[in-house]
Image (cartoon, rainbow, N blue to C red; front, top):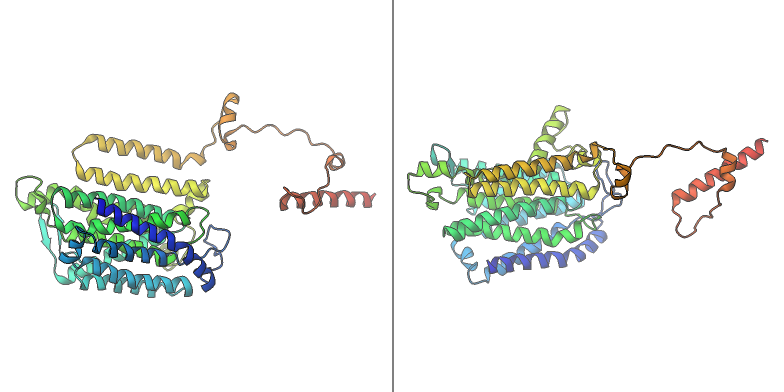
Length: 437
């Protein structure tokens, strides 16, 4: 555990320290596009944050290769090298897209090629645990197609949700934390060495996100761009593929019995990892709804719009920061709820806890829809939106109101543009009235 924590801290430190220089480089390189119709930020913000995240990934793998215990992962498995190869390719495509805005189909092709590079080096799904059947061995083509599909789905799910400051990095960090706890339990508790690469990938992914988040929280000083969102999506998918298709379910030996029975009993454990949609359920739901919405309108599935989940939270009335924290809450509830259910699927308390927290989440989600009447004595402790509005007093003549106003000169300290404009407007109305007389 100490070596994993050291790798996580080194990755976070390198990512954090490099993000500042990368921001200056992005500004000089012109990787700071104009604000688009679907954007929610108000000022042009540099991209290319994925550069710092990629070097954080390289630093984490380099440190792990020189540690006593983690170095065995590189000796016994080729998966870390496969991850680095695929990550380098997808990162390069993302950097080009952040600078030159390449076509969506070209990015999709690059994602498939990156997944294929990992498959060629051994990071692929070898078999699937299927309920009531057992472990089904996959042919080379079946494993390749399934691996590529999982990588592409996960990358685009993370890329689609990257619409608010700190949203994608925080949600992926939550998913990586759940993955780390599960993979470490499989590796340490059951002594299965095949789970060590996935544990390492999750620790490095957490470090990448934690190191970038201080620069990306609202108001963000830099965006990760496609070079970052596609990169962390690929690392998350690599961990899921490693621990799902490489570990024999019967090797867990949770109980005595046949392999068929073992697989049947461990379905709650392996289904969340076989389909990462339960770990990144919120981004996956956003991805599916976006594809259905755009194709229903006759648009391309890759056409950008303002119909994502975070956009709808803003339309409901949530602030930028509150919308991000609500998405964090739901991601953590689903990820750690799946993790707790995989550990003890027979506990009713886990189900009741998830249901209770879901009710709280729904109440927080729909809170702006309601404006309850608060008693007079409690109005001092509630936000202004929940206070009762006083009845408007009869308006006095305009001339008397104008004479009572104190003219404010333009440029006075403490006066914003709206106040200065309003004052000049009333003075102009007064002059017009005197001229007409």
